[in-house]
Every structure is written in structure tokens, then in C-alpha cells.
Image (cartoon, rainbow, N blue to C red; front, side, top):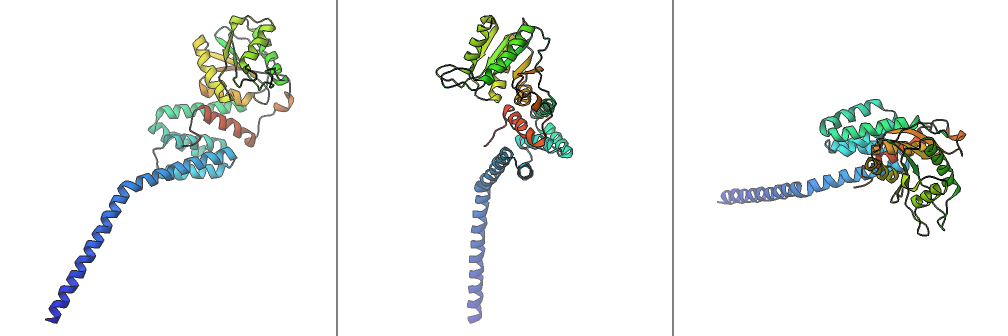
Length: 300
């Protein structure tokens, strides 16, 4: 009798443990189905944001490590693959570039094509030399002069006058090319573009030849907004005019934005010091701007 009761008790306890185990399994299944993907997505987002912060701060190795972890967790993340290709290019890691581009080409051909354009743009920009001489261009090539911060009263700073002098020389050498002045950041109710327009008109350029882009607040926006304006004007290429220490970044951004840059004209100031090609550290700003012009999210 005692043995029978003992067996019954053991069986009852065993059943209770099985029920408890089943309950734990059910909870685990629900957690995996609901919380798991969200947690994984949060981890991927954190890795992406961390990588972008590292690139901004100049920590290339840490940023690439974050991207490798992200791609391992989510092999279908096209933006991460694009960033990995771009920053591996900056690091000189050809094998990593090729691997990322091959995977991206299979996953998202349009993103792959855009990434290839970024790689072409930064390569072209790094090899660009500051040049104070105007280019011989026709009416389908626009002249784009980039703005520079105005004084509080809306007057031009000397640096912007230097850029405008270079743009004026280019406009005289190419009398049928449209001129685009680009820059927002108004001071005393006057945008950079409007101040530039007035300066050029004051030096004899016809007002109807000058086209104003007055929303841009950065080189990235100069490139994106001016590229659209150039297309609206029927121009299929451009000469970009800015300062010697700014020309490479500007050229990269305009190429990424979709402008065929056929000339890069600069003012004379700092010309000699900017002739040597930038070292890898100095190229980081070109790569950063190019990724932003490509409109890869800086954070998620």
C-alpha cells in the first residue's frame, strides 16, 4: 500500500514537472517570437549607429568591426554593405571592398551602382588639383560657385569674394554657360546665393544668366540642390568653383549627387599648400561627405 502511494506521488510530481517544463517552453517560444526579433533589430540598429559614430570620430577600425558584426547578424542589410565597401576602400582593403560589392550587387543592384559611384567620386576627388585657370566649356556645362558664410550684416567675407572672382573669370571665359550660385545661411535677411548674385551682377554678368539656389546649408546640400537645378536648366555637366582647401570635397559630393564634373576652378589663396594630394587621414572628410551625399543614414 505504501509502495503504491509512493509511486503515485512520484508520478504526480513527474507530471507537475512536465507541466512546468511545458509552460516554460511556451513562454520561451512566445518570447522568441515577439521579443527576439525586436531585440535583434535593436542590436543591429545599435551596431549601425555605433559604426557611423566611429567613422565620424575617425575610428575606422572600430567602425568596420561594427559593420562586420552587423552584416553577420543581418546579411541583407544593403546600407551596411554599402558603408562597409566605402570605408574598406578608405582603409585600402581591396578584398573587403570586392566582397561587399559582390554581395551588394546580388542583393540590391541600384545600391551597388550608387556605391560604385561613391568610390569613383572619392578617387576622382583625391586626384583633383586646385586650379585657378578657367576651363573651355560650352552652353550645356554650368558654372557652380559655392557659398561661404556671410558677415552678420550680410556682407561678403574675403574668402567668398575670392571664390566669386574665380567664378567671374570662368563666366567670362565661357559666356554661354549658365551660372549657379548656391548657398543659404542668410544673414541680415540675405542668403549667400543672393549676395553672390548681386556681386556678379555688379561686375557685369547679366542677371538672367545667374540662377539662385538659396536653400543649401552644407556642401552636401550644395551638391544635391545644385544638381537638380542644373538638370532643370538643361546642363549635363559643371565646373565647380570654390576654395583650394574645399575643392576635393566639393568635387566628390557633386559627382555622387549625379553631376558630371568636367572642371574644378579655385581661388588663388592657399593654392600652393593644397597642391599635394591629401593623406589618408585628410581624406576622411571626403568619404564622410560622400556617404552623406549618397544619403546613407547617419543614424537609425
